[in-house]
Image 1 (cartoon, rainbow, N blue to C red):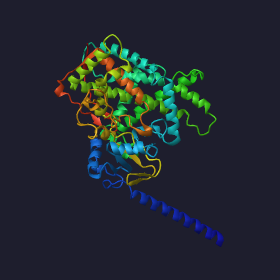
Image 2 (image 1 turned 135 degrees about the horizontal axis):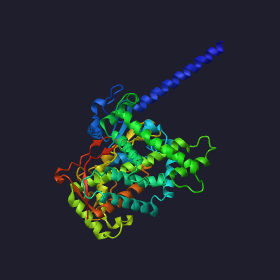
Image 3 (image 1 turned 90 degrees about the vertical axis):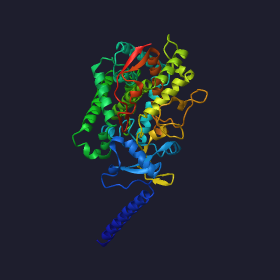
Image 4 (image 1 turned 90 degrees about the horizontal axis):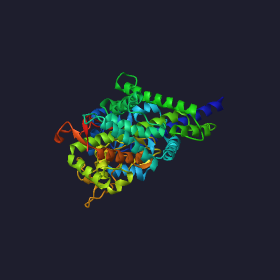
Length: 494
């Protein structure tokens, strides 16, 4: 009896010591976190942040606390990195330590850590490696996908000619075209531009993506644990994502019924074949949940980012007709009017290449980056970030770093041209992020932007319903994403 009592006391003592050591260790680590504004319980730094201008709010805090600081979004503790040097040191120089994925409340509510974009650890590595190799198998980065983009550009030209120069909102025309390129890879086919289900999918994508940029979307990032139970636009955004998930699940079921393991037709088939190969592995990451959410990630990202960049680009070109005229002149000189532009043409078109880069830089699609997470206790500069700490690499602060761009607030293609008018690269051009979690669709997006923009401009000139000086190129919303303003324009045959 005495022995068992002593044993229990010893166990309790050991447990108490372990708890105290853990608390002491955490306090020690937190003591070495980057500085930041004092936070209140539960609401964190909410009172110091403007949810309608979250990016600007964080940049204002950096003016006081420096390029590396800590902020509390509700109960979420986030380390914010500002400027080229801090972001590169973390994401490139310490790539492995900063390779984890942080939260994005709107999408995480659906994904729950599954799929390509918001997974971590071994799951993320396996799904990323598989996705890159499979996209390559279906022509990404090769001539096959270039021909597919050119073919889709032909459908777009036909649709634009059908507008007969009327003023239209280009949003859905661009989304249809860009989405059909990624659809041909993940689903093995394109959609007709009149397909009602396809148009419904695009509305769901646009609605949920736009929500992440709104004030309510940023509020949801802070208080999702409470707001997911309350009525509001966050429920509509989740419903839209569920609709997209249901569509993907239906596509997967169709492929399962007609699968030929010896002849994969698309990304879904390739994943299903891998699932069959690993069905006896108890801990395989190749299962239906990861298939649906990985396909959704590719379909969503492959549609929204390029189409929204082109939307912003058209508005900027109408604001700057001198830039539009120079692009037209270069297209006429290098490509002419009797053949479609090719991706190889860009080597002879430095001005057009500079314009596309400047559209991406100025448009700043994901200004705060997709959140990262440190994978272990990490020493960064003079700080110590505990394992699991979330990190915001502020890509917008890199794209606007005055050390690399002379007038970062202005739209100016000269940012990417040398004194001889030749294209020059910039280390601060990071719209696709950098490091181990950079956007794996970068190569496809670059090809789409060049081929679609040059093909459209080869055939049309742009006209706004406003005078150039009256065109407002400031974004409609800036949050997780930058959303361009709605506008109408006319496509006039050249």
